[in-house]
Image (cartoon, rainbow, N blue to C red; front, side, top):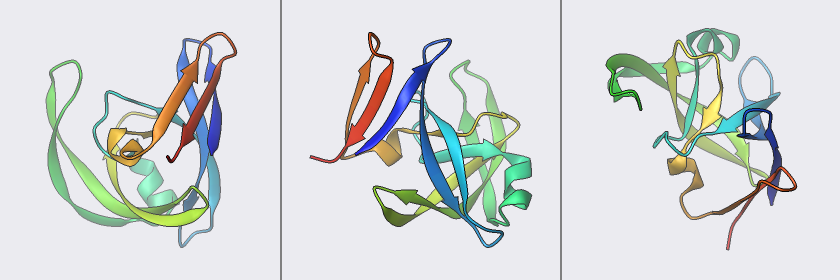
Length: 121
């Protein structure tokens, strides 16, 4: 089970580990149910974590704006195992995980106790 907190502003966040050639790094990430990818992070993180750039991709944001962004491959620790993921790079400084990563999981958000849990059935 993966646990996290609902923080000020009602933002659900968990901690995951990014596995990179530059070294592993525990990072707090936003659980973004409006993002249909796996992982998103800022352009600068590609350099920081020495990630392999793949190609540009057209992205439509919740605002309706469309923009060409880059994506790369990386690895994270997910339920105690190393998992290869596609990482969308953008100008947003918020690291996040999306619904593609949550596929096959049960996520519970308790807004009274301010907790988030993600589990596999």
